[in-house]
Image (cartoon, rainbow, N blue to C red; front, side, top):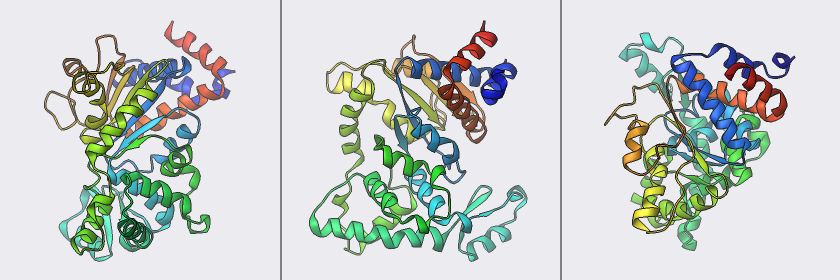
Length: 340
């Protein structure tokens, strides 16, 4: 009977036994036990996950209380909005591996910006959103108001009229996060399309760069957010990819301890998914053991590394967790059956 109620969860625990599949299964079980015990989970998201429509999985997980905070690149932040307002104008290129330079030049001439096997439409996405957000920046410049980068997007995505949606609002993680008022940091937001657009308006004198709070201010604010998130059973860290989206927020623990000289709970869980081999000094970040030496994790932290494509792994994990959330009693039976 359990298979009819929790098909993905049972599939995962029945079939995933070794190698990366075992890491996926074990990370899912530890995630569930942490959440079920009253803990929280903080996500770090690098890569082009919003363009890859990971919001289909993330949005319901946010609404269901499986995700409690986020660190995202500026690109992932804005591209979740693009997918909502310009979804029909995206174009997919399943044969991208065989493209020539001439193929990509034609895509440029069509005013599309390719992201692996899909593309973002210049006019329907960048320029359509620009006409809404630039007045917000100029207004704040005149009023000498300052905000965090994500606050512009939180406000904008909730002001857009539903009749302008092309994508499903149920599959927009940014909308779900804004509605939940999820804590969020966007380190290095300058490295995004709208970071560039903002810089151009600063260059022309239309906007004051100080209206957007800095990355240092993000960290200063995150000290308090982490303290709240880690209260009770603690907060785990779930990381997609490498780079600043993960490196920035995970440092809050040692910085609180050694720079503020205040106590801080260690991260209560760690999982990283990357399709690039995670090794010392690599772009995808250090292995979990190395993070122990930086006092980001401890030897008792449940740690998992899944070397696979996040667009395959994350939907599987989150769907399994959503099923467990909807029917925890049946989930417990599956865990007992396959992990005994």
